[in-house]
Length: 74
Image (cartoon, rainbow, N blue to C red; front, side, top):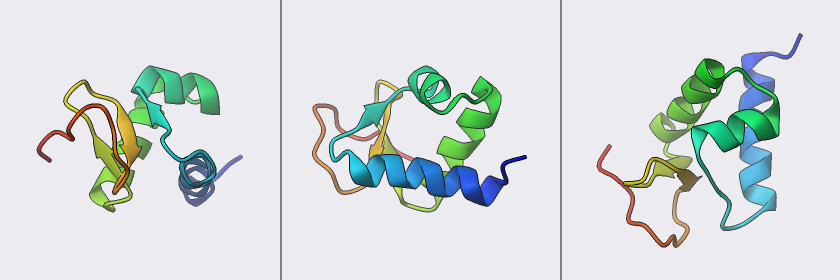
């Protein structure tokens, strides 16, 4: 079984390998084969760690990247 640390590392690697990657929770859930609730918790943790930001539209992008939408207030 995959650990939480492995999931976090996998998500970070995806964002690092694909600059400009912007995913909704649903897209990330399908990409990583995760239950939507687990995926939401993973993305929320990455936001708390200041690795990701969430756009006003609800999508997630790597913090410090330029996106079409301004990040929402945390």
